[in-house]
Length: 145
Image 1 (tube, rainbow, N blue to C red):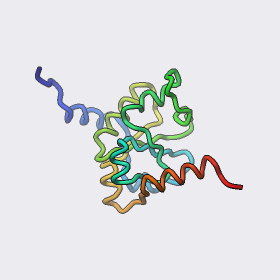
Image 2: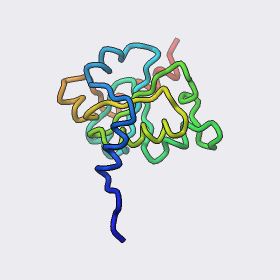
Image 3: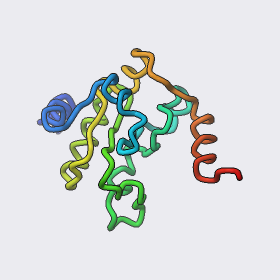
């Protein structure tokens, strides 16, 4: 069965419909409590390359289920309408498609990073290992004192 619309066409359509930020724009807003960066890459990528400090780790395969309050897999963090969720993947293709899917679901507070994690690293933006990310996340959830 021939493919009638290839991945490139899907990505191009998504890119034309979603909000895209440069790495520089996201870095400038990274400390803003109204911004939540979301890493949609799979665990193998996270283990190999690390992630962005403070990012939510939301694998692409679960994203639609995690954002929908009617889903048994809903994650309340995605219900915060005061935040803008900025997605990224490896190169910006999956995050463009994911951002479009979330917009199709009704989310208006979602965007993605142009060039993904590869561009983030190329620009010298901060990263951390998956282990360091897990430790920081655990410390935020269970502060000592």
